[in-house]
Length: 134
Image (cartoon, rainbow, N blue to C red):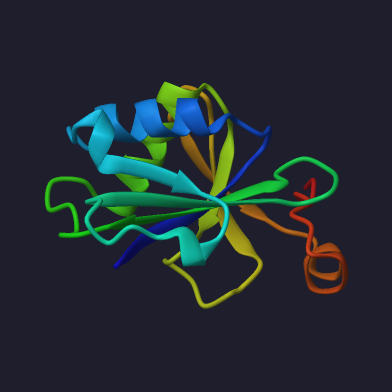
């Protein structure tokens, strides 16, 4: 079952994702797979991270984290904060506190969070995550 999606400001390696997810979720390293095609899913792995590297710009690596069973001790926000710290990369996650599809949470490398708006045209027409500066 999908836990959460995030757009990473800078691409990170499959190795870094695998190591960080295994640490964050207290799962053995061998129980985490990082794939770039959903058809590569190995259902015996408790954690799978699907990556999609888009052609250009910041926040161009999108990850989807699947875990079975779902983590009970970490909220999505706590998980994203911890992952940003482990990877040392800023990330965007959906802001589930609003129905606005262009409202996201920016998670810093230190794990701090702030609500931000994403440029509607950049996302809808170019599939890019561009933060609107206030």
